[in-house]
Length: 356
Image (cartoon, rainbow, N blue to C red):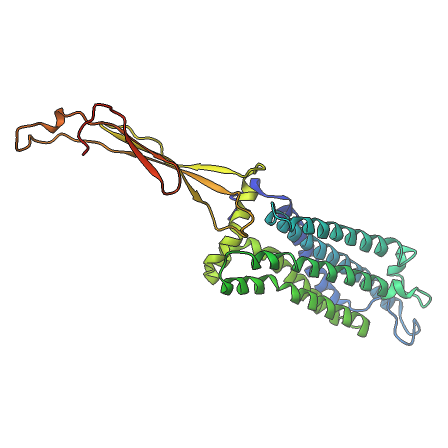
């Protein structure tokens, strides 16, 4: 709706499509997990009393749990990547972009570390994630170390990203009422942190139950909403009548659709000159601001508005003294705009004439 087709998609748009696929995969496997809640976490009695069918069911349940955990990691870091790329475009030309680059590097580092330790370090050999036996390593059953590490990187990156839009909104030209509303919208990430904390609590407090699944669903769903919310201006405008929300995102849309130079983008708007008899007035160089800027520091985006006016004279009957106005010479005029409100008119004919 905003980019007018797939050809204007940026990297974060394709990443969000991929992340949505992981979110769909998570939803499917969570429903399967509810039918196979048992994993390789053995009860207090151990493997005694378990039939071969029970063991196979626990092996399958362990595989489902692994798929859910991997899908959750990809959703978490996919949403982070999309949102940090959005902030990168939002802060072009601002000093805060250096901070965004640091957070971007930390997000990439956290994802690599979590994946490397999850696949190659915590549980050795890797297939012990799906083995049901009493001598199995606790890290292959409960994945305690992995849950702690992923939680630390997940929450810390969320907190660092929450600190990006708040200073921008504080220095914006919006009214304080609108600033508070937008801060509340971006602060929905706090609920994502709360959901991540609760799902880890249930993973450690009730490892044999599937109560953690419900908080996985809440965290993933809220993360998807928060990530896509800044780009859903059209929907928000219609549902919430948020007229001032566009001032936060309008120049971002221009940045996504236009390739800007170091001095900013210049767009020309105007009508084509019209033909006609008589005098013609041309007004050029009337400059107007395109949108309300996010901050007072970024003043590069402007629109040059060009207006052309045509004035035509028409013949009329002789006046009271018998003169025919059509026989008079009508001078041509040129209007030159030197600023938003400064216009100088000058007569092109040196011999004078009647100004109608």
